Image 1 (spheres, one colour):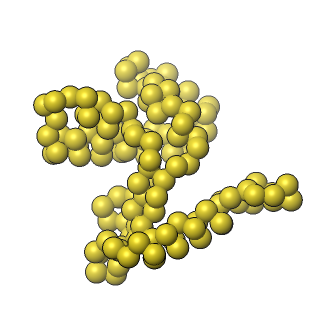
Image 2 (cartoon, helix red, strand yellow; image 1 turned 60 degrees about the vertical axis):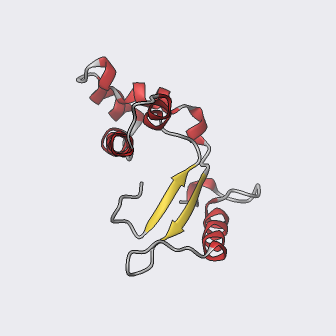
Length: 127
């Protein structure tokens, strides 16, 4: 997951639970929205990414029910198992690329590298 310091951005097309909740609350400010989303992303980084199912279950045993990673995984939904996202990159000076053709080229290349598109492809060797 990209951070503000990353050399790229990744925009998921499926909203996070914090985004859906904030959009329904008329009192949400841009600051509270950004904080809620960043907090949820950090929770995903710490509690889910890089962990096995067993690790998540074991760690959840020591958490309050509302703080469990499995609750967040259910809220994220199965749609996030289908990777729908758009990528863009930052220039060396930190500015975001604004050339649509370049961004499209990057996205096409990523899809080519990460796709299983024939029966001969070995999915275990695709990053």
